Image 1 (cartoon, helix red, strand yellow):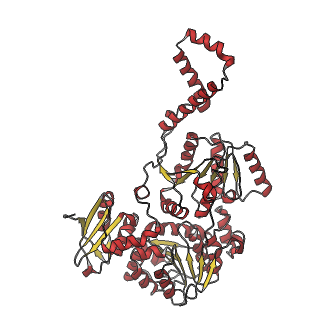
Image 2 (tube, helix red, strand yellow; image 1 turned 135 degrees about the vertical axis):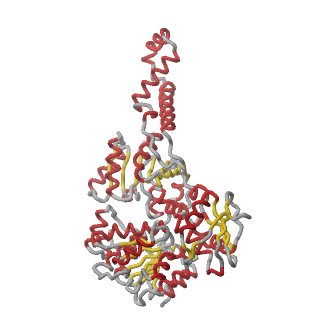
Image 3 (cartoon, helix red, strand yellow; image 1 turned 60 degrees about the vertical axis):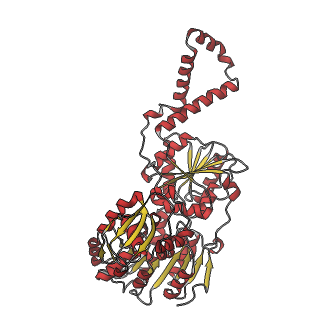
Length: 574
């Protein structure tokens, strides 16, 4: 094994071929990527895909949200295409720290590999072991696994890694933080000596470099050089995020735009397919919209932008092709309908508004599954993004009434009603002036806004912000400290803590990482819900956020940790 720092490739757009077509992907894969609407590779994809397709090992420094899943998934699918399958012997393995990430990576592999017939199986705690074993027995090309469940399958003989010629360690720093170092060693020792290995980590601390030195052969190191964002402009932008399930995003966007109509705005989507869908839906709701993406010719794009500058368009719905170099003075709103996978892209999007000293508004719709990506963007960009509740139908009704009142007051202040004063005096003499004004306001309100919002369909927008994002915005740099606190039992000063008794300890081989991994793997909760852990000889004590205690107890009672069924309960002295 060689020093991973010998061969460093800093990501640079000027060095990269244009588009996915120039990266060496098979025609079927390139067509799949195009059909999904992705136009331009991110820096980590531009630099990693050709290296991995060439067969070299790779050490990538890339955080969540930079597009690294596609960076290894596309080469993995291509390099395992057509290989003969044996029962229980996958040809490729991806190791990830959490159940949530295992599902996401498996979904991406299935999506990219469908045209090539790639079979994919995620294996993680909380899902039926027997079902996973049966699928492995039938034969599967690619396995995405959490370390603990992979060790369980290896121990029971239902998983054989002797044919796994391509191994990926995704978010390796987080796996080490969660105490999986021994499990990683055990898993890698069961893979072929000549395998190709890719390791991705947000940081390259000494322990990551040590892992790479032990298990990678002459690796190419890819580092993402961050671009300088438009900090001054972005800081003038009022930023708000709303947690909304994806099926409700269109309705949520419509309500938010009704609450605060833009003079002109851009709605950013991740793919051209979504751009067309959103543009059509907004047009059906009465907005003057145009799509803008790489599927349009340069001449078509220029005509669309000219209509936006001339005020003939309310909303431009676009991919990131519109996020750079676009300067529209009267642009008041930017909407992230989809979160970008690159924090720099987020900065460029938001920087389209709040220009020339004006205040801008940025709205971000976040699917609950994208919470980690939002935290990564916040940490990388140092931007404050307020997480707010979706406005209700009553809020919208109240806002519309305020807009009607403001319109009448503005007209009065400008003295634009001179021609109607005689009529007004005549009607006021014959009627109660207050009742008369109320009728006039209602007529104006209905003309401007239609029926009252009380008649609107009030969707369930997942209004309550998840506890993890609302209470504990812990940046990635503190993960190592928190892992150390888990092991050493450092005090946790945040309230609402419950202490759990676990009937196993050092004599059973139990470690803090086993408990953290079991809790996150079996429940899907983030590691931040776990506080100090004390491992005694025959038992252990774990502090967790009180609101999740019952869920954790129930999940651990059903799970096996180190092959043991655990006795878990609230600690009687805690």
